[in-house]
Amino acid sequence: MYSTAISLSAAAAAAVAGGGATRPGAIRPAELRFCGLRREALGIRSLRAPPQAAARRKAAAAATGNGAAGSGGFDYDLVIIGAGVGGHGAALHAVEKGLKTAIIEGDVVGGTCVNRGCVPSKALLAVSGRMRELQDEHHMKSLGLQVSSAGYDRQSVADHANNLASKIRSNLTNSMKALGVDILTGFGTIVGKQKVRYGKVGFPDNEITARNIIIATGSVPFVPKGIEIDGKTVFTSDHALKLETVPDWIAIVGSGYIGLEFSDVYTALGSEVTFVEALDQLMPGFDPEIAKLAQRILINPRKIDYHTGVFASKITPAKDGKPVLIELIDAKTKEHKETLEVDAALIATGRAPYTKGLGLENVNVVTQRGFVPVDERMQVTDADGNAVPNLYCIGDANGKLMLAHAASAQGISVVEQISGKDHILNHLSIPAACFTHPEISMVGLTEPQAREKGDKEGFEISVVKTSFKANTKALAENEGDGLAKMIYRPDTGEILGVHILGLHAADLIHEASNAIALGTRVQDIKFAVHAHPTLSEVLDELFKAAKVNSGVSHSVNEPVAA
Image (cartoon, rainbow, N blue to C red; front, side, top):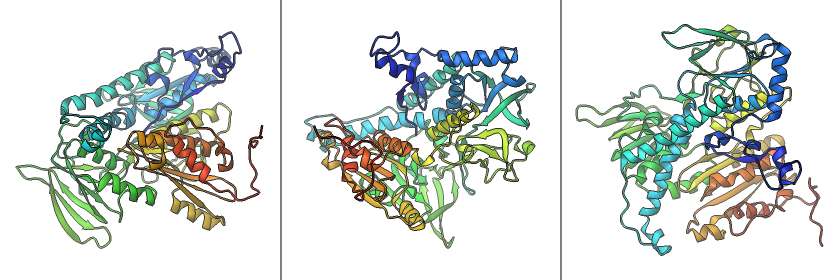
């Protein structure tokens, strides 16, 4: 899950205001800052570092007397192990800060998100969304449209996903090279304090020094014991994204983000789906009310059945004319319940950190279930609980929040710290999204989590909801199915969580996530103006519906009557 946002730098804002030599309203490409995959992923060609960053970098090089070296006699100011979205975000921010930076990648630039995750999956979901719309005869007729039967070419769909990943990967690689980031090929290992060795099998290793090191090695699909992967009939999301086949009947083990998105793809392309979920309800990570509504919209009307409260204790790939066999046992009693026979099985049971072979033992660090332990500043902690100087870990490898954009945000936060500005990332302000049709998005706490927090800390919570059926733009699209809900504190107006199911929910959530990040209270944001008619008014109505206790102060000036 990855979103790309655009914000104006201070220089660009000044230009818009008419300051400087730039004409009013003109914004130079170099002055745009892109969060997430940033401008380079979009192919914008102005890739030079900002002038102030170049000046800082030149000054740092001059201080060491060697323009080719980092400060303090190190080869680099920053070395990043792993060139996924997190490592890429950290590297580009480091360049902006004037740091001599290298990134080590043993596979391909872009990591899981670009090559085997967010990017190609969104290409497949774009196809499934259009297929659903074309296949919905009632929806088309309500808009006055007549469409002949919809079809697809499997290989062309697969090529669309692969080509998108290749394009983004190329753009990311070129962007780092153009900005002066050294891309070092091989697997990185920490061999001591501020020392990293890297190399490829069959070639001599190289050793470099760095003032600071960031671990950003990401994760791999988690496959429980008893499941045999053949990559053809029993596979993970890595294999599924290649779309080598569209099985008539596929079991999806796990009903989280990955499983839910693939159910959307497979059913749109004609497959029947069976969910196998270990917990007692589908979509256990979602707010329960949203999950219940999502089941009514995304599961029940489609060719999907499910088994909850069961483990897939053994899965055998199809061979010799026999189907895939899935042995189900009760999650609590471990007694055998039944055996499923299907054409294929997708294992979507989550992801595991990719941290083996990093040499963490050389700095007295012990992983916890494979995750690298870190503090709130992403600084690695050793076996004694002490922070390891100059060593950080971001993204899936630390397990704090396994989302690509969270990794990027953590990386940027670390670069801020090593550049001399203390920064702590508020993980409760980081949004998440599931790109089904319609989409699901969320930020902050679920309602049960908020109630538990309130009971523990002694405050009340309130909940408000709005329906997409009351939104003009949603009705114009004939997409009225959906709900938005907000959990907040009526005594302070603090927003604790926002959850959305509906058209473009993944885009709408950011107003709420930014409000949480900036500490904006309900009593303030309800005065924000939203264009009409737009889907953003779903959130506008949500904020306006909130009731804050009388006497609670505003953090901004209340509107003054004319």
